[in-house]
Length: 288
Image (cartoon, rainbow, N blue to C red; front, side):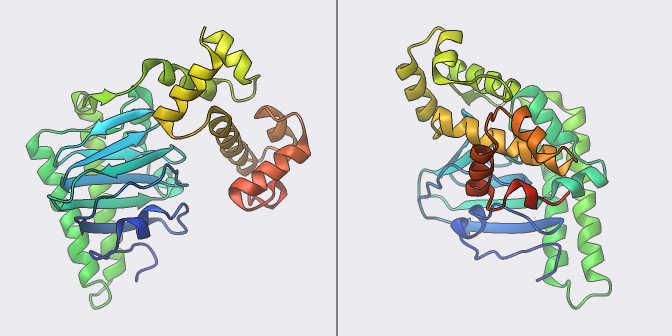
């Protein structure tokens, strides 16, 4: 396999979906299967772009649920909690997936599509047929490159160039086609409001009692609907988002003790223990 990609049409959904980290610039997958799948909620340390080619599947991302159609593109920003649900084995679930290192995207200024998902609060893009076909053809070219990569002159470089070409095309389309980000999502508006409030206030008091008072809700009802819609308890959600924010701060040069306070932890030992449990390393071991 090339250092910068992976292609395996026989790879199972679980094999690729459960990997949380990416140690190269990108990986490419084309996967088909008929099994009914229900992957647990999780997140990745990289951005993920999916092109659905067939099958009956839902995608749940941070409290929003999308019914996907063929030629829908799903954008999952790094650290977003999500899961796919494949509902039926009658139709083959066929999709192309790109794992994309965020630094790789930033280096080539190709983060526009993922930024737009954040701005619009929509994680599925549905383009006119001509645009979807153009991107699919570019993805197919990547697949062809990979098949002959080791035997072709500058094969790995050609794969890389065609990945960049596909990403340029996709980002250009996302910038130009605002209406593409309008597929309807099912969601509980109150849960989305709670999520947005949490993300804007990770350094502040986010106790259950405070949140229940702020949103004028019974705390038991609030906890129940949040769990139903996101798969996470409120406490677990807040803790994981705080740790991820703290890691980003530390990687940007913020001292770990400052990151601890900035992300709402009042006790460094509690912060350090939670950080280790979630990420497998201590805050002091994070590489800057």
